[in-house]
Image (tube, rainbow, N blue to C red; front, side, top):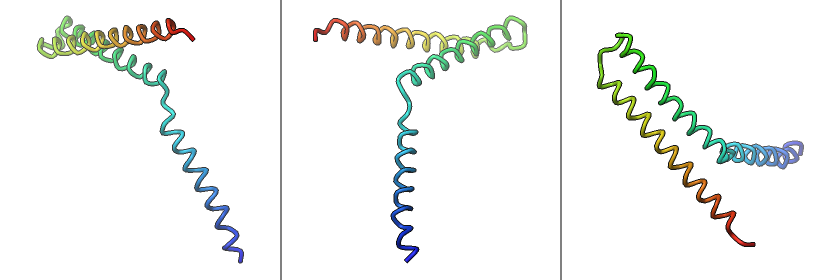
Length: 99
């Protein structure tokens, strides 16, 4: 009889654990995603700066890699600016809505 009484308690524990796991998996907010994107853009900018510095100091002689890293940094920055513009447009549109 002891084992039968333990089944509902075990089921409740499993349900609570599953609910907590689901909330942790979907816990990424818009702010988290935005800060992650900004960090990635920053990393590409830093990598481009480092490759330019290596080319200037003579550590690297491969100008192709430097140009590729510079273009990656430029494209990621343009993408971030366009994302910012779209978010601002959406915000302004919401603010213009009448209640």
